[in-house]
Image 1: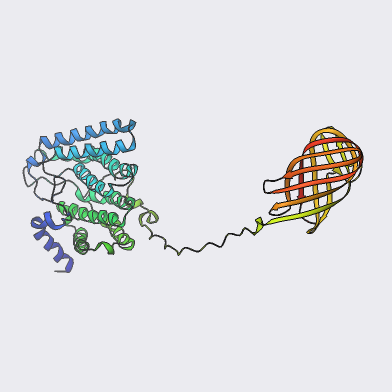
Image 2 (image 1 turned 120 degrees about the vertical axis):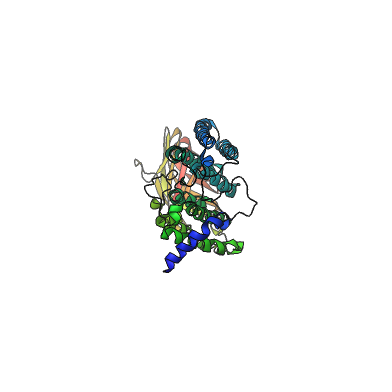
Length: 424
């Protein structure tokens, strides 16, 4: 007898008597939401009351999906959770056989790992997929199962396709572990998932007789024994990703009951899961905080400068008040000399008056920062033989005054722009 045959023979002998407690992972006492793994199904286990419960539950959930459309996300979560709990409680005292009931039980247990999490997350990734799957399972699996076995005597009633069910639900469970925001929560969901997969394989005589599934049952048993006493401080990203890898491989290895086709909840098909989204990376290491360089405010040090400009011809014609190098030219640029070298000055104004004068302009600067920049302010030029030119400009941080004298005639006043460009 080879090793694999020996394992299979051992399983066939011990599973019926040990299945119920083999994968018991709950720290709390058993409740009505716990699942059993009995292997013998009696006619009363699939009686008319069970069928009526399944029918009413599916109808209730269809109405629920329509009702919650107008509710807030928080209200949707609470009402859906309440409805699932009520449905499971209504089945209290009845044998747990139907696949839709397993989906509801597991959704309630998974929700407990998300008590403080975002309502939309729990609704869209835990409760809503489970409810929609429960409706689909009733129509495509549970109802046909009840109809096909209602007249069979005890001993001839076969269980539902649990192996097929657990195979297509692994993707949903993996997604639930990924959605949890804590390492411990992820770990708990992965441990529950392994226990559920093991129990599902044990429930199906056809599945557990398959040598591949038999090996997986023993593998799960060994893993759960190791996890049972795992200290919290040893739960890491690497450990959780290792468990995810195990479940993903099982989803591909599990041999389902013959001629069984079943749709996974929503789009959680393990065959299409991307490893990029399945395995969570460890958090980036926290780098020591670098001390910020001292704030350099040297550019704001007080400065002062005096620019002496070339003799200019100042012209004011109605609304244009500008300074030109030569009479008749429209240029408003001229050259000034200061301690920093030569600067180009642009001077232009909009105002009223008429003026022609030849003057010499001096620009005095004081303030914070560089002398170059653009300034705005009033400017007045008056000439009755002797010409006077006064301007006062600022850019918020610095002040520039302009003074000029010469000969000419007329007068002009304007709101002017004065721009001092970098040295030549």
